[in-house]
Image (cartoon, rainbow, N blue to C red; front, side, top):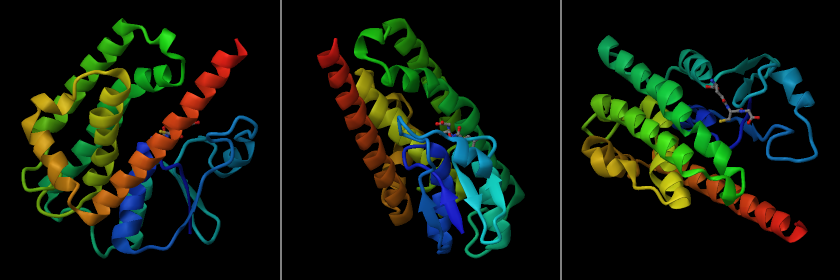
Length: 233
Ligand SMILES: N[C@@H](CCC(=O)N[C@@H](CS)C(=O)NCC(=O)O)C(=O)O
């Protein structure tokens, strides 16, 4: 089995959570054309015509895109241990938390991802403030539904932890660090308590460390590009 992915994207993180928790061996591959100025995505588009990460490729060559679909496939194909609560209501809450991440939290951060790739003189304060405001709204949705027993749902890891953890690295560490904005968790006590607790789970801690390292690498590369640009002008 192969997982085409990048460590800085929040979407493959939830797939890696299942791989690690279920002990599934998979070759991890960074697709051509991601984080590269010379390669194109043409080769990768043959594997996943949507052109996004992650893609799971089975040993028989079948390719499956879309993180949530991949997670559901892995749960069905490798049921033990389950990362889905048995109770239908809790399972729905797990899916709701993941969906809030996909539809609201990530979308709120997109303008900031765009600005981060540009030089600081293009960081219009109105754009930053509007995005940070939207992000606070989206995180408040998580605050309403997040579990209070150390995990997103109940007392053990579920798929929702894999969806939320990388978003909180971005929202509560990367954005305040880069844009000098306040930590949004300062006004969200349940989410802040969750964030402290989830970092003590070894699998979640591994995912969080991988995300932090990948973001630091990205940021160093962006800095190097910006200083090369300054020297050239
Ligand atoms: N709905 C998709 C979203 C995946 C996605 O948007 N991945 C981004 C990285 S965060 C991507 O591959 N973007 C294309 C690119 O960076 O070229 C999923 O859940 O897998």
